[in-house]
Image 1 (cartoon, rainbow, N blue to C red):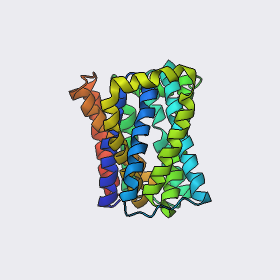
Image 2 (cartoon, rainbow, N blue to C red):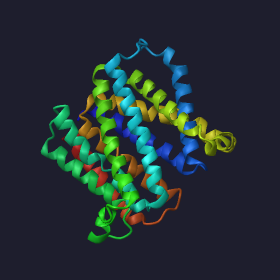
Image 3 (cartoon, helix red, strand yellow):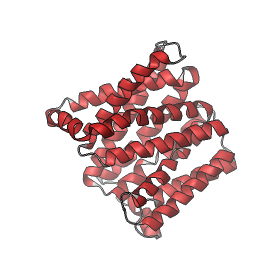
Image 4 (spheres, helix red, strand yellow):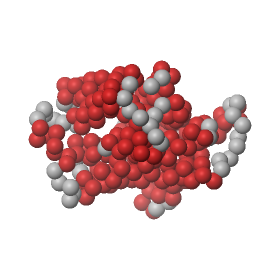
Length: 290
C-alpha cells in the first residue's frame, strides 16, 4: 500500500471520527445526519466549478455503481439504527463492522486483488481490535457475546448492515477505477441525500428538521467540510489501494473515537478500548507494509 493511499485513508478516518462525534452530540441523530449531507452537498456544489475537473456526467455503468453505493450506505445506516433500537452497543457495533470480513473476499473474487501474508495479518488484527473495542471485560465469553443469539432482530440487522456495506465498498472501488473520484463522490453524496430526504419526508421527522437546525446550526456548518473531506480522501485513497486494505485501514477512526471518548466525553472502559485501538493501529501498520 503506497504512502499516498495510506495517508489519504488515515486522513479520511480522522474526519470520519470527527463527524461521528458531531452526530453523537446532536439531539435528533437521523435529522442531524441529513443536515450534514445537505451542508456537504451545498459546499461541494459551490466548490466544484473551481476545480480542475471537467464536469462530465457518469455513463450508464458508472451511474449504476453510484446508485448501488448510495443505496447500500443508506441501508447500512438504517439497519444500524434499527439494531440500536433493541440491541446493546457492545453487540451491534462489532457485528456491523463485519464488512471487513467480506470485503477482502469480494476484492479477490471480483476484482482480482491479492493479499500478502503481512497484509492479511494486518486485516485480522484490525478485525480483532474492532471486536474488542466494545468489550467490558477481557474474556472469551465476552468476545463471543455478539454472535450468541442469531435469532435476535438486532443481531440480524447488524450482520445485514455489515454485509450491505461491503457491497457498497466494492461498487465504489469499481466505480473510481474508471471515473474520477471527485465526481463519483459528488454524485454519491447527491444520491444519498436524495434517499435520506425521502425518508425524512415522513410526518414524524418533518417537525424535527427546523428544530435540529436551530439547535445545532454551528455543528451542521462544521460538518459540511468535515464530511466532504472524509468522503473525498477515502475515495482518492480507494483509487490507489486494494479495497481489501482500504476498508480495514479506515478503522483507524475507531482509535480516534476511543481517544475522543476517553479524553473529552469521559467514557468508561478506557483500558480495554485503548488496547483495542493498539490492535487496530498495529493492523494498519502491517497493512501499510503489506
